Amino acid sequence: MSAALRLVIFDVDGTLVDSQGDIVAAMTSAFAAVDHPLPDRATLLSVVGLSLDVLMPTLAPDLPGPAHDQMVRAYKEAYMDLRAKAGVAQSSPLYPGALATLRALHAQPETLLGVATGKSRRGLDKLVEGHGLEGLFVTQQVADHHPSKPHPAMVLQALSETGVAPDDAVMIGDTSFDMQMASDAGVRGIGVSWGYHPRARLSNASCVIERFADLIPTLERFWEAPQ
Image (cartoon, rainbow, N blue to C red):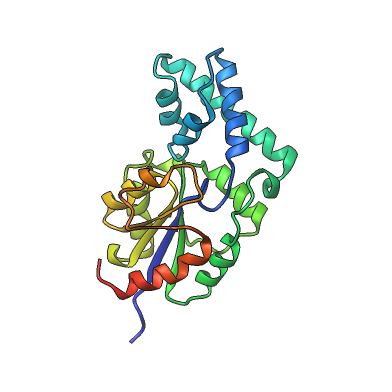
């Protein structure tokens, strides 16, 4: 009898890639576009993972809707320009050990990989292409088609597309939004310590790992124990 399929879903920014430089630079352009004071770097990074249409009102709640729309457009234009100039590998480098871990998991016949990200489809496609990740992720959930994290829609859709049971799935992420999304979808969450939220904000995580090399052993323990 073959083993049950397992699904490992990854967040992107702050989990697989370190894109904070471009995020802060693009956010600077977004706030400049509406002549609004820019929050500090820690505040900007604290909302990474939210979809832009939720993120901008969160950072600038006193501005009207049209200004938020203008900020979203300015952010996207600036981000694309930065990525085009520097290239994906330099603009959003993979964290150490990320690629080797993805390839090792992909080589496991019973393991499926997925992505759940606040990026747009276009943004995710560029990143996958730039890092040579084509063919690794069987399910890709992006901000274009779902409510913003921490709504569980992305994880629920990934489960539906793959046919994997919640007990056999796990969400990997660096923010409280990722861990809340996982919890609300009925799957376990593994937090990572190298991203944009401090460990104290990952209270919904089943555990927090310190490096990519810890992920596969942690998953093996998860699969052996009931949820």
